[in-house]
View 1: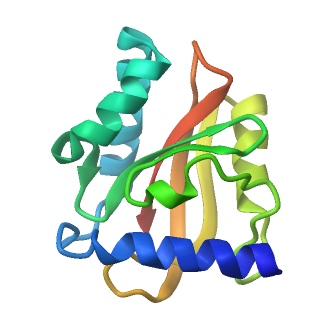
View 2 (view 1 turned 45 degrees about the horizontal axis):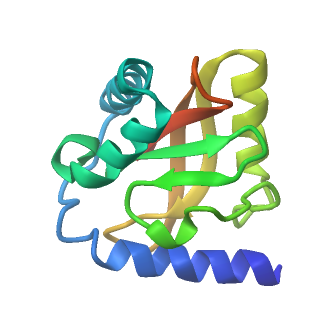
Length: 153
């Protein structure tokens, strides 16, 4: 529980600088398209360069209230589009307010289906309130992890 509260503080802190950028809500179609674009970019330039590009080019990889995330298959946060403090953190045991282990669901979906939508509750970057969220994830072909982009419902 202490880990949850610490990580939630990091999440909220990361969104403070993001709120000015996110003025509209993204759609599921936009989240899927941004995920697919991130997937193709990793495939084209390799994971190391792609992760650097995600961080360097916010206008391309952060749209409305959507941003790219990358986790490995142990649910370690490799890249987070709006909160660098989460990068490198183990997220396996992270639960939403309802106790859902959503990162474990993401890993299982990537391993069994390759892609899909995961639903959970998360802090919205603009409202700072916990809202229903769904994230589209896609297993990377040349990296032991997956990329994802979520939308608030």
